[in-house]
Length: 315
Picture 1 (cartoon, rainbow, N blue to C red):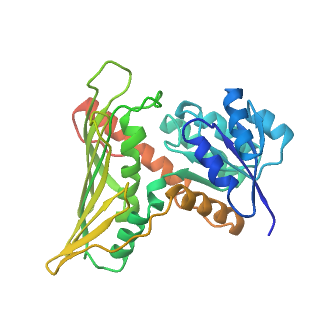
Picture 2: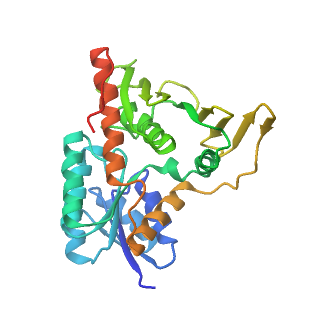
């Protein structure tokens, strides 16, 4: 099997994890890492035996690259991604897809024009707990899924600088609403605000209406501990998951069943899926369009909070 040449653009807190996972994959060669902080790039490159560069242009000048992860600040996603796309590089862009919906539309159009494989870093889709819940729903074990509730809270993350809690935390669950219910959100109503001085919101309560279903997404950077939970209520049973421990359970009139789920690193599964899609020419899930739609839901939540009224997503 031909070796796939990959790169990571942005190797700060999360990007270096992409570099770590790629470096350990079979039939994949990590050929370079890019960061504007060349010392950071050099340190990561030394750890994983590849070259380092200060820009995408420099990377593409010196290396032939088949695929890349974009893990830079959100405000640079559009610029970095389009530069890679024009170089014929398949890419996985960390969430949010772009800083604004307008940028996201341009990015998706560029990718379609260049016919590159594009995916978005919605890592929870690859969480074994979510996989098990999705399986139960597909098998009809909970009946018709009706209610979705997620809680994604923690203390203030020092690494966040250019997005608020909606586009950093809530967006994971906004994507999962569409992924689990397999239908589009019709309207969004949200209360979003900030409890401290700063440019971005730090808590959000988002209500989403779908045909015959409702979802509530709770996120904040105010809680002194980290909690990540999901509950789906169906017509026959309720399923719940702990995103962190990957524990799941299903409860019905017959009792509660808690299976043993072998913990697996979701990022590893996500990047393996990305690589597989490139090799086979498969349409990726999540796709760039999934990323665009999740971004539309996030922007609808922010607009709804500002206007005090429900908003129809700008799909």
